[in-house]
Length: 145
Image (cartoon, rainbow, N blue to C red; front, side, top):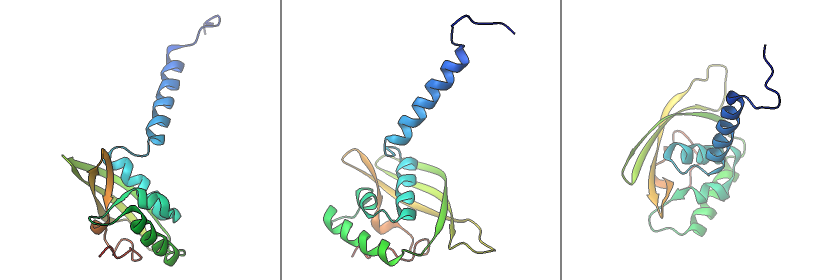
């Protein structure tokens, strides 16, 4: 075992840089489709209507209208529990499909079911298409009609 006399080992520096980059990616709010989908699904699990509204795009609806719909939805679903895992994303230009496994309302025989979110790029940010969410995955979805 050798001493480095006050020098930092290159592996320590690499680990610190990697950790800083990872925190930066997580704090960026999900600027890639998979990150945005994870932000959206985490907000859905927490009942965070504000983040859901910021992460949702609905043709012809204002952010205020979207927020109002999400507030009602998460209130209706306050006892609904699920967990999810992002399995992959397929961006194609200004749209993307994000695949995930979702365990709905935990029970003894719960298993992950395959669902996907449709995302669109609006004003340089990825947003979940409000009309492209499966009601089977989350029965309390707003009616964005």
